[in-house]
Structures are given as C-alpha cells and as structure tokens.
Length: 114
Image (cartoon, rainbow, N blue to C red; front, side):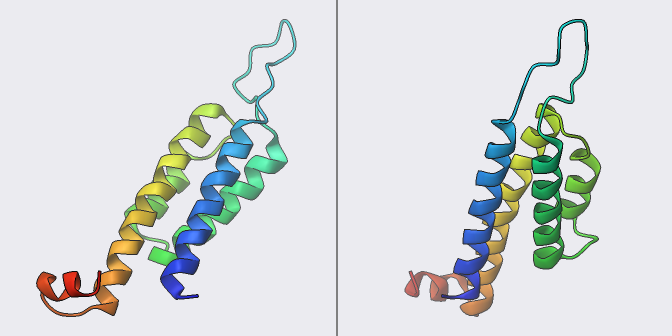
C-alpha cells in the first residue's frame, strides 16, 4: 500500500467518523435550548484524529489545519458539518500534491502515469 493510498484511506475513515458523529444527534430535553446535541466523546475523538491527520499531512500552520482548529470547536451539528468539508478538501489537495511529487516533470509527464 502506497503512502498516498494510506492517506486517502485515512481521510475516508475520518469523513465516515464525522458522519457517524452527526448521527449521534439527539434533541435537547424539553424546556432546554442547546446546540450541543452530539455525543461529546465521539466528537472529541473525531476532532482529535482529524486535527492530527491535518497536522501530519500539512503541518500545524497550514490553512486547512488552522481553519479546522478555529471552526470545529464544539459538539454541534454546524461545527461537524464545517469540519467534514475540510478533510474532503485536504484529501484532494494531498492526493494532487503526492501525485506531483511521485511524477516529477511537466504535466504531460504526469498524464503518462495515469
């Protein structure tokens, strides 16, 4: 298994985990107003793993990593939905970057490897 394949599988797993976190939504009890409706433990595990992957792939100062840190803070549906968009984008970026590193040269040389 190549490093690129492993990374893409990890991203797919993180997206599936995020979707699983969304499925833990439970409305708050009557007479309670709260946006914190997702399982806190599942959210924390997913957020930690996703942030770790972003830092590993791109570093702690990359725009994707910083965006995730700033916009995915709480166990709310909105935060998880924001976060699910970030691994998907970084996965496409990682795949493209990895492919270019494995196939140096002009774009026409890249097509030969397809």
